[in-house]
Image (cartoon, rainbow, N blue to C red; front, side, top):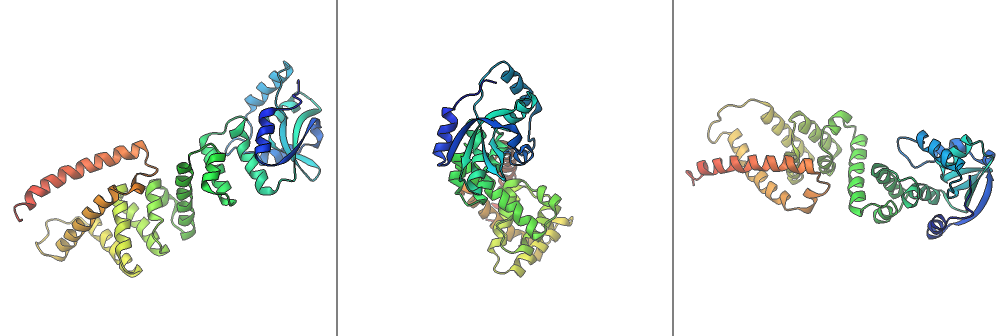
Length: 317
């Protein structure tokens, strides 16, 4: 391999990160902890792509220059921040040394940030899924969502949405909600359900939602109705009533009966709630095209049925 004495792009990245570093053009491979380096890597599913290692080795044999790897010392061994594929290619070539920038004095948080941003900055690009996960990890380490998004080459809204979804999943696990039930609910709706403050009510709501196979619009209305109730006992009572009413095959009801009154109440509250929710910005956050298509179909059905009902109701007006 023809080593570069330095690499302007890598050095600029390290300088922008505010870390000290030193180039060792012939760092001994025997002083590299390859196992820990792979555990330290920034890829979620595959630590190493063998075809890339082989391709790098072929290029090295042909004399193609590669930028130095980046690493830090721990227990007198170097752990890669950036350079696992190059390191493995050098092993494949039976080389004894390789060029490495050795980072000095960086704390654990900085090492994590450098590891996650290396490929975004100049290396083999990570998939968007990986970059989002890295951004969330950085937020958990104490950085702002905007900073993490910028470091990972993402939009702030992407990180904010992913954070809300991750926190909703974390809450569901803490509450003890069945994972299959929870995952049966679309991600944006899971975020709405997780806004229910009481754990038992949230768990009950998930049970009702999955048993009745509620769609996104229904879930949004349900959560809004839950929040309107004054106490957790009233919220639970309401959920039980909805489950009982919707689960039973009810025929024609008597005018003025308790069931009819309940349905009239639901018509008023759900109708108002639907209109309100459709005009709130968060209803459209994280909305995927396939979800939007589903909502369009649902709303068209609603409009058609409402027009039919309107004609009938006008006879009583």
